[in-house]
Image (cartoon, rainbow, N blue to C red; front, side):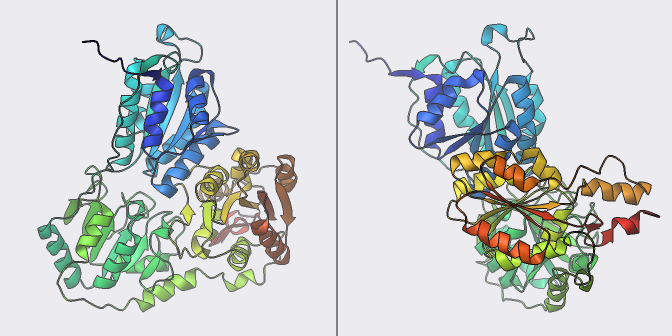
Length: 554
């Protein structure tokens, strides 16, 4: 009896069917000749969107931001050596930030591989250190299968990016149509009853229990609040994960970031019990691997077994999903406890207010504290902020309160140029939200051209630029370590508002609090992307130092 042959399609079509079936909605890319059919199939698919960016760096940051915000990976695609190299910064950011991402890298054609063909690089080796899995596919009929496996790897355990290099001749080949795949979410392991009771007893008996919550707790906010209240534990957010716990809650004690006020860390230093949830205890979160204190008993809950105990010696470790584990902990029958965290809470609240010296500021431009105060006056409290790397961010980290979930997108990798592309992706994924990118002039001139992308795709974001004419972070380190600065003064002031207008966006230049209030109010109401160029005092280099204090005779 004759059998009916399986319907055929291109390998690119099969890949896109797998992506769309997994709920993936966007691909960010600079189009390349090595994946023509993939870009075409995504563009033609009814439930997916192809977003063409101005630089692969922007594409990588956009895909990372969407994955971080939604929990569903986005696609980043680049071609061969130059494109793949440009994309690498965004992929490294996803790796450091535990963000799911699917990366397609166009490669030289199959019969030319290994011959130093045009723009050929060993992409599997190149991307291996910055991804969860890096592979090259050599058969068109395996592409859909490998894509499905990539999605599973990217979203399971500790999420992260997966890179698939594809020779340019494979996407257009005819292959059997892929079978329908049922959507299986990643396994979410919880605590055993014995583990739950052990942790609950420990937290109940502790004198000063503290929770350190990281990005792994992003989807467990309500459960985290209940556990903190149940055991009367103070809560710190890890580096650039300030939105994992409501900052206006009386148990919130602060942010473990760069430049954190020393006084706000005392409660963690004095804790006898520290529960780490969804944080890998990075160098910044641990303040240079100095916290938690050696005397404290530390318990860690993480979805990735490689992270449990990797950063510090543990009293207890559990491989479990944060949400499932925290939900289990709230089911303990032990009596509730009470500790008074009001003093530690007041210390943090006081650290978020500008010092009195700001009122007497007479330097050129606005004091950075004044910019954050203006943002607090003008922006809705549920605004989604994307923030760049730079010393300006220390003022934002201290001064802005994250009261609502999903309101902070920031790279723990410290990658410059993140804010503007991330804001574009955030607005596409959450069009109902007010989205504001916060950056310095260094980061803005790296990726600010993505304002054109924002205009083209209809993403009315606001970009607030702290323009001080410096690579401020490095200038501060140079001044402290060497007593002088070199290579960190950049041209300025630049007409960044004019730059924005040249890309089709709106632009405003401000150097006063009144002008800032007006510009921000108009930007939030505008239907076009808007850049607000705020001239700030270059001498105010951090919340605790000025350049003139650090540089003798400056």
